Amino acid sequence: MNKHPEYLLNKISGPQDLKKLSIAQMQQLAQEIRTLILEKDAAEGGHLGPDLGIVEATIAYHYVFDAPKDKIVWDVSHQTYPHKMLTGRALAWLDPDHYEDVTPYSNPDESPYDYYAVGHTSTSIGLATGMAKARDLMGNHENIMALIGDGSMTGGLAYEGLNNAAIEKHNLVVVVNDNQMSIDENVGGLVTALKKLRDSNGETRENPFTAMGFDYRYVADGNDIKSMIEAFKAVKDVDHPILLHINTLKGKGYKPAIDEEEAHHWVMPFDLKTDKPLAPASEAPTANSVALDVVSEEIEKGTNLMAINAAIPGVFGLDKIKNKYPDHYTDVGIAEQESVAFAAGAAKEGAVPVLFENSTFLQRAFDQLSHDVAANDLPVVMVVAGGGVSGTSKTHLGIFDQVMISNLPNWIYLAPTNLAEEKAMMKWAIKQRKHPVAIKIPTKAVPENGDAQEDYSEITYQIKPGKDVAILALGDMYAILGEKVAQELNATLVNPVSANILDKDALDKLAKENKVIVTIEDNTLDGGFGEKVASYLGDKDVKVLNYGQKRVYTDQTPLKDILKDNRMTVEQIVEDIKNA
View 1: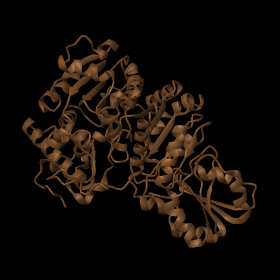
View 2: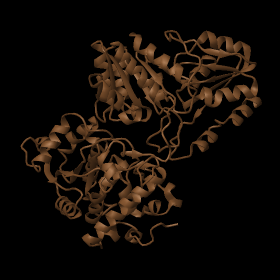
View 3: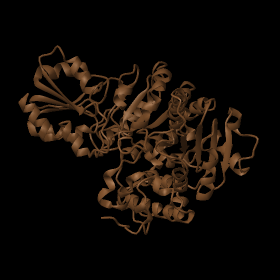
View 4: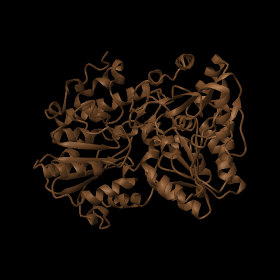
């Protein structure tokens, strides 16, 4: 049921309706959009601060330009909630029954007003420049714009994009949404450059954008609809590359999001009256807290440890390290490539780098994982979070980390089945100085205590004997599925310890003693752990069944549906084993 039938937004079916409004009506519309963002995020969570800050710029864009003929590429596209409301998708905010109708990022499957499924960062300028070149080639004349901000400018691809955008022969507008924040505080020299531009009202001679060849314009108040309309009218239909720098307020309209920007970048469901999360924080140890405890202990012991992350300290709770041990902490910005190369440099000089990476962002650093770390066999330690089957957007899946890391030479990829094992793996990885080691920390609920080795120089499978069937359940799948399937069948249960180093002696023995060997992993099957086991056992007289996610992009699909579709429930696996 529509919660706000009186809202002006109900009359906006697309940008053409917006063009009929007065400035006062657009200001009213901005307030309605903010209210709806707050109501929906409070109910089910989502990006908050970035969307509250971009409202006026979005309204002004659609008032001035002629989308979808004129094209805008959003970066990061988590700031597209207002855009979606103005392009025919407002019901997904007006009516709680339709909250799930849209994804949290731009998505061409949803609307002709979205051009890419984009959930990561710094890609917009490169994408828009390619579009502009193709437009020129085909003799077309539409406006093409990249809107980049909320930290995206600290990613290396943004600079590569700027380098090529600056020499575009015809229309191309880059809007830098400068809200002085990323997920955490912005870092690096760009912070200094943008501050000089803001402080001088865009007049400083130390302008990196004009130095590259851009025509440069500045808007001091990017949250003023009138100013934004005038700025967009001035750049519409220009015949050269322009950079429009707009100063906006992240979290505008909701004081807690202004006062605590990092905490309100993305929120879990919360009480709008108190700003408190609806689900109280647990005091029990977590995969993150265990990792942070190990890092803290090592620093206190005098280890020359450097905790490194790429703009996502909140994912791991790294503020604890940043505030207590500032000399042992580096945030490189939204630049995963840089974070891995930086870690390689630190390891070469003798420090102990501990990289904190999210599975879905790690793909952005694949070249450095291979070229700089693996090829040089440098003892980088990497904690990988979010690696597992999930019901998130197709831009944020965590099912590819094993395939990327496990298939590179020299990397050892460990997968703990409980928090005690995670701690032991981290301590060993920090102590050893021979190879790069990644640890896939649990994403699902696992026991706090359990069996754990002290030394992982040789991978030795941990085996609980049973009969006829052996279940090799990797990482968090051990507790989630492995134990339950083994119990149903009185099967042998195996903790394989590593996602990529096989205990061949154990596999030989298991193949002799069992009729069926089953692998279960929280990852895509292709190129994963199960295929390695199946390949090794290919000439043995034993049936092998592999369970993981098929090589597909799921998109906001409920986790239970994904697991069922991949036959990853206890009942389905037991049924398959009996049939085998």
